[in-house]
Amino acid sequence: MEEMKNNEHIIDLLTAYVCGTLSGKEKRRLEAQLKTDRKMAELCELIKQLRRAGEKTDWTRTQDTAAKLSAQLFDDYQKRKKSGARRGVTVFDSRILPLPEGVRPATVSTRRMKFAFADLNMELSLYPITTDSYELIGRISGLESYDNVSVVIRSGKTSFRTATDHHGLFRFERVPALIYTLAIKSGNRICGTIDIEL
Amino acid sequence: MGTYDSTSLISLVKGCREGDKKSWEILVRRITPLIFSICHDVELSRDEKYDVLGQVLLLLLENIDRIKSADKLLSYVGTMTRREIYARHRRSLYFRNARDAMIEQMYQNHSGTPEEIYERTRDTQGIMQAMAQLPRRDYELLYALFFDSARPSYEQISARFGIAVPTIGSARGRALQKLYTIIKRKKLFE
Image (cartoon, rainbow over all chains, first blue to last red):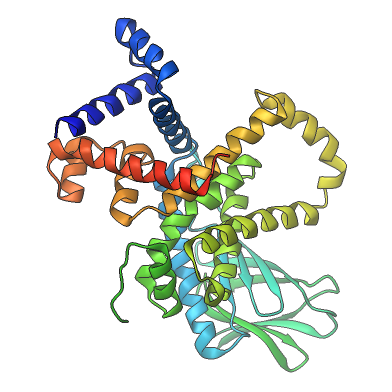
């Protein structure tokens, strides 16, 4: 019990030393001890490393954002396991990211998303035109040829279709904000599908 | 879903393999700091870091059946993160042209020699790898003490973990001892 209390006191001292709040006689005494006590010096270095790692970023916001992104990714992946490899997985969605410091929501309007399919990838940028419609600009990568490749987005009876250019780029000028199923087609063959909410 | 010790990394991997979302959430929480520490060290932008995170998490899910040990998991995550970063740089249209200017700027903006910079980055990744291997309780306690940007007080930690305030010091000591043992055993700083 006495040893545990002693260890706690040492860790408190080392933490204060690493934080720069230890001064005077106590600091000098500790520094002398650190020169001769190897284990204490290693513990001090460990606490220093932990503090340094902890201060590198706002870990709370990072973890919260990672949790949201990974939850979406996991759900999409489970759907792919059930439906087949052509089902896409969301690997990035800027809507989930926290706003940068000092930036008001109104100044951030573009949303960027990235999806992974079995053999191809797609990036999508959404530009709000009105409060309930968007311009979509996207790029498909990973196909051998972009001849006769099209993208169809469908929500109930509402659907839009556009062809890609030879770089895999495509654009929907104006689509209403709905939940769509997006399908990438090469000729009549469906290469990939994903659900997206605008 | 079956019963298993939810605190160890490999039991979390098992849970993910079985489609358990809670295991996935806990596993992601453990490995995110390792992925981000690697991304920090190459100065990716905020969006790029999350992009790399998404790619690495998908690769992990797709290959989860091949992960048989905690060491292999962390090694895989570290390797895939670095590969995604390198692949990103290679794909960048401007990287080749700006490479020399960027390298010069990197050295101007960093304090220390390349060896010192390497030591600092390696140590952070070593800490994150070791942290990820702690039992859950110890991980969460050290996370609250060193990583939680809300800087919870001992009273808040007591409420969160259901432990008395006077015992937090000794719990902290035990967690640090376990972390120290992992680092020494794995030679993460050598």
